[in-house]
Length: 131
Image 1 (cartoon, helix red, strand yellow):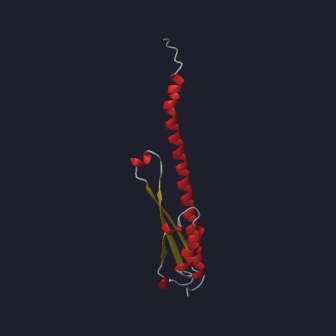
Image 2 (image 1 turned 180 degrees about the horizontal axis):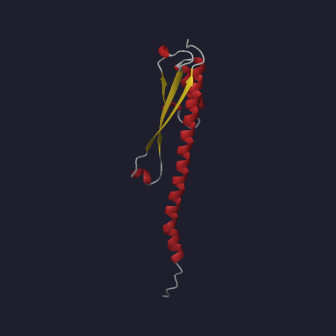
Image 3 (image 1 turned 90 degrees about the vertical axis):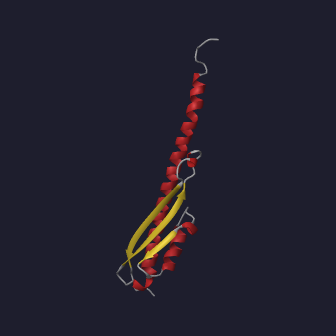
């Protein structure tokens, strides 16, 4: 048996391939988390705009649901401040959204916390008195 190293490249590739694939999956997952964070920001802006125009929490909730994009709108937590009876024209109103992204990375998810909380907050002025 000669020691020419004919199988060395195959063994190295077999050892390096899983690491390279895991790195690729991590990069894709980071991209998905960034996409979700951006979608949450857009939904918060749309919700704040809706409540600034309409003055009601229902308008904000409907706008967030419409503009949630890839997010599950049922899992988006919505908080609007101040309370409806404290809102006045020209005063700021804030919409806060919360969403928990479950990270799904093969093998790594077994050892690392897979719940990633995302938040977004937008403040706008009320354009008219609430109904």
